[in-house]
Length: 258
Image (cartoon, rainbow, N blue to C red; front, side, top):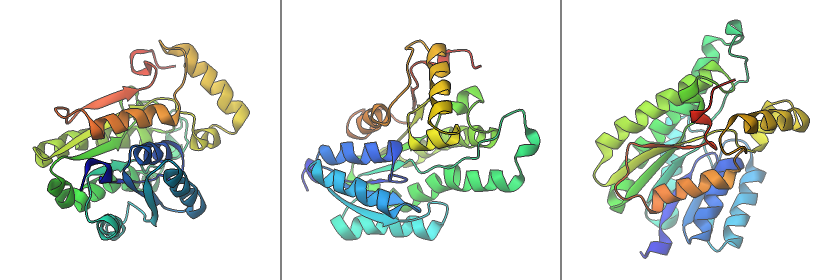
């Protein structure tokens, strides 16, 4: 197949960063599997946008915390288009709990968060590894968070899960080379429906976004498209980059956490 017929799976792509990534890949001629856990309607909207952008796309329901679902998701791409060239592990979950509230998190909370944020990317990468190697220039991009570096974010469990994801990114980069590159991106404060809901609605979100902007060198927040641009670059370009983690946070990783 020619370059414009390469195939990608983007997990958790019914909205936000995943949706923006799927649409940008479609705009570049990729065939895209739009994955969702619960939002079939949102995923179909993203599929429609991918088609409007000039690509091809299908929506596939799968819970990345379930290994059988991961294998089925990869098989859907291969059945539909006969190959797989890129995997974006974007599906994630959290629980919004103030870090000082140690009693606000249970062992079950950690297990649920790690199941999606750490075990999910591992299972997806394992399921996709053979097809990505066959591609000859396969790429995996894990969506992490600046919270892993700063120990901030929606909860301690979330920050810890993204730290684990960063370590796993390096491990997978070692074992999947030389034919598959594995990298991570670490967004900061990104304008997504998930963030708005997590911060208690539009007004509180706006206040938080303004506070964030005041702390960072670039004095602004990020859009899903900003993160998608870097993800796509790591997939299509960056031929000598693997095991790396790129911050997309307007400089938050250099600012004092408050």
